Each structure stands twice: as structure tokens, then as C-alpha cells.
Length: 205
Ligand code: ZN
Image (cartoon, rainbow, N blue to C red; front, top):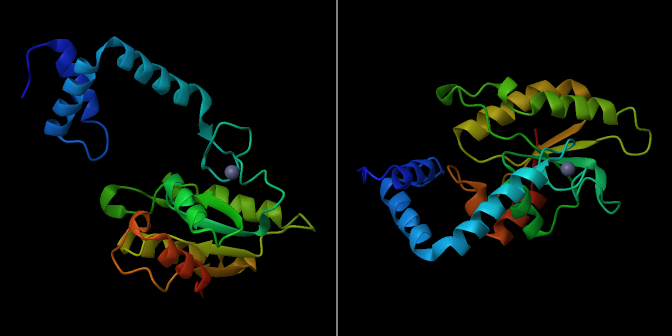
């Protein structure tokens, strides 16, 4: 439903572009923004500007960072021989909160999904292969294990199988988190203990 007030309709339209926000929620948010006054809108605008200006993908793991390399990739305390492959940057935060994994990450930025038109070339898979290849030239810290921590659904399974085939000849240990992650579940919604245990009980592929 349009309000025939172009500025308001435009704001509602932009808000419906956010994931999980339907028309009704977008209207509620737009009214909230309007009622909150100019100061709030200014802070919101500055916050939006700041993330766009300061936050970018880490060139190594493709998580978000405001540094040249992200905090995890540049840490000297992390085990550089283990790389955990996840779907989204938010998964890194979830696994970090579980606290059991001390290696590095690689964010695919999605999963293979023919139905949604997502092909392997749309993901950071090429970068993962290059990263493994480059690391094997490093005599001290070559990547020895790749842990797949993808969602336990059709797209996660498809992507894991694709990666397993692709990485098998690379002479690295390939594991996938398994126990404790129910089928069809999104790793965003699993409690920290379950996720911690799933990471410890990973299986070799
Ligand atoms: Zn990084």
C-alpha cells in the first residue's frame, strides 16, 4: 500500500529490500524513523555511511573487517594450518563464540544452489583453492586441514560434496562438522555448546 507521499514510499520501498522485512514491517520501521526525529535519522545515516566507508572484505578469508587483514587472519595465536570453511561472515562470529576452534576461516559468501542460480563461480571457491595452493609453498604453516562448517541442508550438502571433490587431490585432511547439527538446520540458530561439540566431532570426508 503506497501512501502517495513519495519520500515515505521511497523509504518503505528501500526497507523492504532488507532480508526478512516485508511491507508491514517496513511501514512500521519507516514510521518509527519518522517519529524518532532528525537526530536519529542523522545517526542512522552516519552509521550507514561509516560501514560503507570503513568495512570491507578481508582479502584472505572474506569475512568483514575494517583493517587491511581481519583480526583473525592477522593474529599470531591462530593455527594457520587449519581453515574452517563457512557460508557467511556471521557464521564466523557464531563459531568464535563457541570458542573451540583456533584456526583460520574462509567465507564462501553463499552456497551452491542451482535453483537460486548460484554456481560455484559465484562463491569464493576459486579463492579457497588458490589460498590452499599458495599456503603449500609456505614451509612453516601450510594448510593441512580444511573443515567444512556449512549448513546441514541440501545446498550445504551440495557445496560440501563439490568442495570434497575439488580438494581431494590437494593432499589435505578434509573434515566436515557433523554430530549435533540436526538436518535442515541453519548454523545461525544452533546453541554454542552444540556448535562447539559439532566442531570437535567433525568427520573426515
Ligand atoms: Zn581474514
